[in-house]
Image: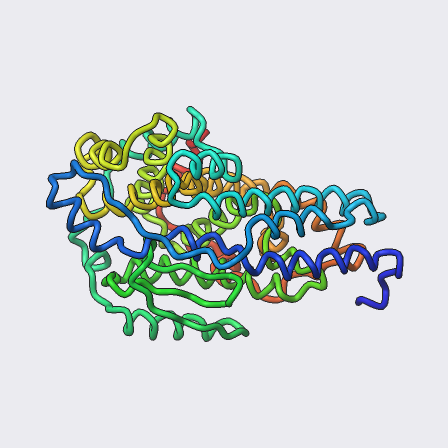
Length: 386
């Protein structure tokens, strides 16, 4: 494929290669997850929800100023193809914004404003959508499928068993320093499982379809392109990526009202950042006003307030709605699986495949092959979101 590409585009590949070298240093999730969540949770509960946690974060192991300079020293103007030149300009600005996020982790509102620039914040309509979902009754939580059942080692076996359907391999690590119960670290092709969590059947079904079925699939597809940007992420790819991952839960028949409400609480928590709420005030909003149990309220508040105010969490619900509407319009989900890509760049991706700069996805999310959703209430909710 690469032989078909003219020598005139050599600069594009050199720039892409160099960005790849730089981007490996800036996996935001490696830095923004507090290292002392459980210890601070105990102190917070002991204070009767009044004393805000003091989180500790991993040390940054790169020269921030030098990294900014290296990004902006790239000769973008020498990329002859106008569409790709514009794309790479946006990419440089996006990654520079992520460096600013990382370098201000733990610095309160400073980090919040950098997060805002990178991920945005919920609109009034997004908040209304979240409140609309919260009016619905969740499934019966005493149901067997929601009962905690599997420890970390047992969960790993279930993940590995599910992954046998896919033609790729990846590492699995266990961690006690994370806000999520599981996550994929893209740059090292690793699924990280939360050591402190006991997993239910529903959670395992959700995580298999979300983490492996989408996040790992797009990681592996992203590595198949000559252009490494598919592996590291297009501008604003997070919304599409998370929306696609939750949509995989939906297509596999595992998206519940309970899960939609969890995503809605995240929107409410992120919205509270814009209102200037402290950690304890956001927690009390979720726990007292919205009647969310104290454990879940703590973790959702931690996700939103980590670093000083991490706004990304509202994108799961907005992304889900966008991907759902995209699918309902009969559009190609395969384009969205080509890597860490963004809905808004579908035309550019098609153009890149046509010109030989990219390839069609080799790995395809198993839940997308057939729609197994039978939850009419969930369908009604997704259709009703504005």
